[in-house]
Length: 400
Image 1 (cartoon, helix red, strand yellow):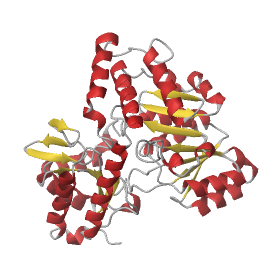
Image 2: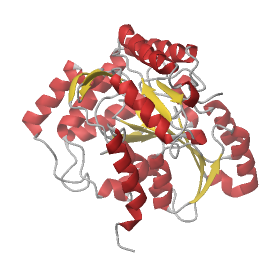
Image 3: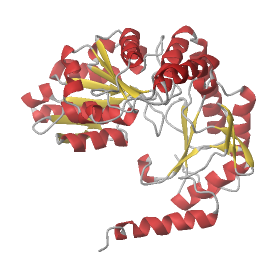
Image 4: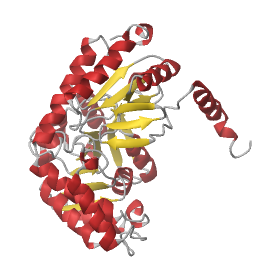
């Protein structure tokens, strides 16, 4: 078999998508007018699939900070953090993140994916055990594969299943790494973190929480689910990203364990990757200041999230298990999902299409993500677009 023959089926599926019209897995947003509006081809759309939770991508202070960094530090570092790519601004951001989370130290990575890859694969190697929620993000699975640890999955948000598996492990469970997320990116539901912490207190283990979708979203100060539930001291490591609430690109890890600093000398995704550009770091620092100073952004986000969740549920759509800035709508087959997604674009709404292979439950879904920058009128426009499609797609809408 030739090298590229393995992609034959994928090529056929892609060709079918292109022939049908817009490709939902390679959409080109031709113009971006604001955090919530853009143009796809001939359609002006409300952007409701961007994870721009606090709407900071066009924040004047973030843009000005990035502009100044470009002028004074250039377009990139052209080196890894261990070589020539650790600037004063990288170190300053790490200090600010550690202060924000109340942790001993922070490590900044070039992307959120690399943060997961770099921390998890380095901590959990051959001979170690990882217990992870079955619905964890692909980057967490990739990290476990790279590290070579023994991986034990427990059923999504099923604390009893986690406990059974830890009891079966016996003494080795005391050194296992438990991996969960604050808000899960597909269904928008939250980890039962209090209950998981209780299991950890009794049976041991180290708890790592990926707060990528919950930083800036949950907690009195926006530190995520652990803050929301009052269990921060029981979480050993928090991972997160700058590409959601903080409106840029990059990732981070924070911890109170002094040994975490040794990852800088052992983590290959940290050592051998070019560091974030100065402009990106500067905009993140400005966004972090804004997030801390403006809790009303979080309040506006949740007002919009509840408005959309309740509106879509009221139309009879099957949505996620709880209100969240991530609002999924479960559909049928991949083909039906593509058709539904295409019609939404034509009605002026851009969301994400998730095919059955990547969606929990094996059904296609469209995934809306809400922003504090959305106006009530834009939220109502999204609801009206779904209402317009309700009758014609009634047969493909997943039933509870």
